[in-house]
Amino acid sequence: MASLAFAYGSFGDILESIKLIAKIVKLIQNGAVSNECTQIGKELESFSSELNHLSTILQSTPPLPQFLVDRLQAESALRDLVLSKFKAKIAASRSFFGKVRWAISEEKDVADFRRKLAERRAALSGVVDQINLIGQSRVQGLVNGVGEQVRLGNDRIQDGIGRQLQDQNQILSRVRGGVDDVGEQVRLGIDQVQARVSGVDRQLIAQERKLKQYQISDFEEKLWKWLEFPPRMAGMQHETQKLHHKGTGKWFLDGSEFNAWKDKPGFLWIEGQSGTGKTVLSSIVIQKLVDDPQRFIQGTGVAFFYFDFRDQLKQRVEIMLRSIILQLSAQSPHPYAALDLQYEISKGQTLPTYQDLVDVLETLLSEIGRTYIILDALDEYKDIVLLIQFISRLRSWTKSDPHVPLTSQPREIFATAFEDIPQETLGFTTTQSDIHLFVSSELSRNPGLEQFSQQVENVATKVVEKSSGM
Image 1 (tube, one colour):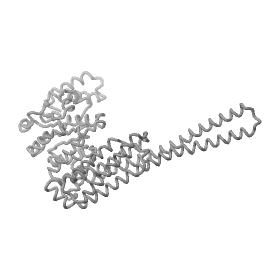
Image 2 (cartoon, helix red, strand yellow; image 1 turned 30 degrees about the vertical axis):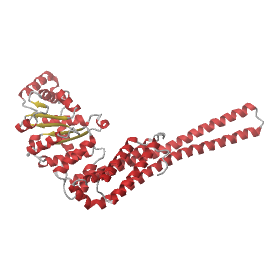
Image 3 (cartoon, helix red, strand yellow; image 1 turned 135 degrees about the vertical axis):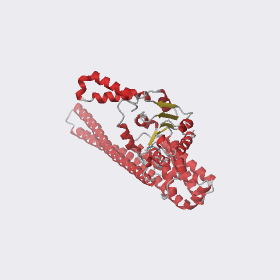
Image 4 (cartoon, helix red, strand yellow; image 1 turned 180 degrees about the vertical axis):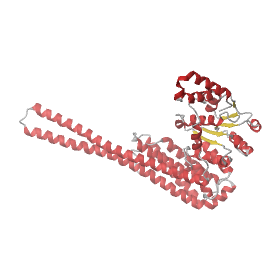
């Protein structure tokens, strides 16, 4: 690998890659694998040594432009994606059926991994070479600039001495002027070099972002099509948000039940009769979580699904799982890797089973960490027993501990299944403040009623008293 004197990057990314390599090597050593896999283990150990060497050198390297750090981090992400997918395949080969699948696809998978690994190592080497090139260009530009200006200064000094007709003060003055000129021109030279490097920085950053967007978009489109186009919930969220008036739902967001659930993993059951505003409340919770400024800092995942008796696509657990998985895959530190592995196993020819989807979801929750999954209108799903079984399984995942609010109409089967889950009951009186706020606002917006402000308030109160929900 090329000299790394000017390299700078994320130590965390490098250490994660080294840990990932160690896990793959251990799986290879503990399993009954072929000579080709044994050779891969040796190549990975060599690669791990190179990464260790890189990490050591980076600790004594001065900082470089941010775009170079971004390039190294981008390569780390792609490298970890390749390693994670191969690790998953090796791990899967430990089971009986996994061994059968592995025996069929081993030659192709091993060759494909070696090719991708070579590409990532070559790409990293290319980035390092670019780091060196830019670093050397900076140094060489400064050296050349200083040398040229010193030569010009010397010429001026020699010219001043040759004249010998000027007094000593004039000669010294010109020498000082020459030195000042040298300093100024050196500064100009540095500014020009930095301007050129900044231009290169911007171009590389733009290209890197564009490439990453294309890659993610391609993955998403391919997998969405493979999963038979599960409904995208963003449209439903947008339409439901239109029913939300500013200030409504604040009583719930400020309440102890919501904040306890938001801060601590677990489940929250919100039940209420039809028309009490459960779906609107779900959309308010979703928007609150999505808009949280700490979300991206903490790496929090948010996914949601609205069951709907009017739409067949929104009445099946498998469809709900596909939608939730696609949403979380985009937010994973390894975007779409877990789902793409299932795609490759089936060659895109068969749909993932219910168990496959559950396994992918569990992997995603482990990758992302803190995750919120909002499920609205459980009572509008036909096979309630299967849905409750899925929720029970979700509750059993103590390692990932997702935050899950559930909304439904009162049903005995839910009351029995969720008896130990914190509960919020929505009654018609619970949401009266929201109704009053909405009606008052709508009436106040009517220009013809401005002079009857007190009467408008009385009308709003009467509407609330006569209402039976939202």
